Length: 500
Image 1 (spheres, rainbow, N blue to C red):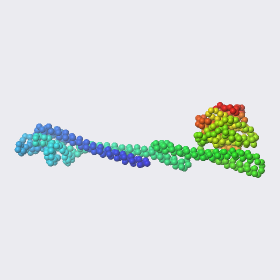
Image 2: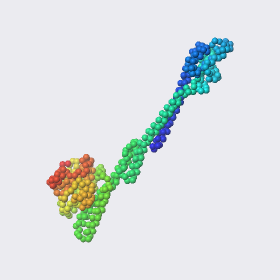
Image 3: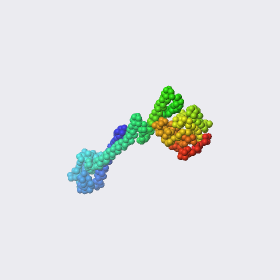
Image 4: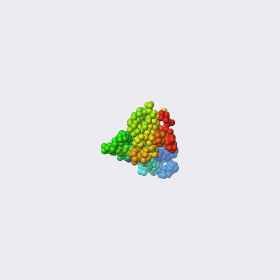
């Protein structure tokens, strides 16, 4: 494309230069010719007054030598022989000897041309050796016409024409070179963005999903770069959604696996019971591998609420999940309390995502606290948000900040998937992303039960607020103060709305 633009511009500019320079050069040559002959006519006209007064040779020679062409030997005067009343030539003081024609200067024009001028009475230009001869008739009487001849050399006719043509040629060449340079720059400006776009498409096809194109160049190429970047973002988002789905579905398997593990623990010490427990442990191990693999490969994504319009009744879902987990709590001798779910609360989170959030929080209670440890779920309302508090009487979290991060520590203080309880760190991450997708957040602190209190703030307007983008903020100020004082900070009373 670059060389095509250069060739097109070269051809167009060359045609324009030829179209203007050639006629202009011809005009310059004609102007130089007209100037030379105009000067010759002016010099020839200067002899006219002298011829009208006298035809004496001495006087005429003096008048001829007074002109520039006469001094240069380029002027001649041709006076015909005077005729008598009967038409016969005779001699007199003004004519030539014996009545012959008077010739002053060197004649270069042919006699036929002189006769033609005398008969027609009009000036003419004859081509002679070395140039041109201007023949100017001057009337001496009713029937007598003298001819003044001025020789114009070829150099005078073409004087300045060569220089003018060289200037025109230089200007034309400069225009052509300039146009080629401009076309080359324009070609680079068009070709380079297109080349970058093609290279980015190649890189994206090879799996380098982080490839992006700078939005530069002409408007069309900028639009193409914008569309490419949008497509690349969409590809990443689709892949992230697939991996997210795989991770979330795998994580949701943890809930029935927890039930299986708890039930298997109560089967006794028979061979079948041991095989069942081994199978459950193997299944948990495989699920952990799936969760870890999906978590490590997927990029960070935002928003789990399923898009505009998605939502569910928070109170109804909490009651349903608490009914499920209460059966397990009863088997393990855990005291369970629930408050704040008496009224309907619509939140901008899809029901499956909310179920995953609650199962992650409650599943962590069963996985990371000893049997018999109590837990509670409280819901507090305000005009623009709702807070879900999940508290337990376990041993607490040693590093709340790391617990909120991917691969964070478990409640036993170990880090990531290598903890003794096999935590993948994805549970709290699911909770955090669901809260931040609504403009809320997740905080971890100490509960009045002596263990951990996870506070999930869910925005009701569905828009991400500035503080909602501050990920991994840990603990309310009162929770941090309570931890520092050894669990002395009170938890909000059930049924009261905390300060949001």
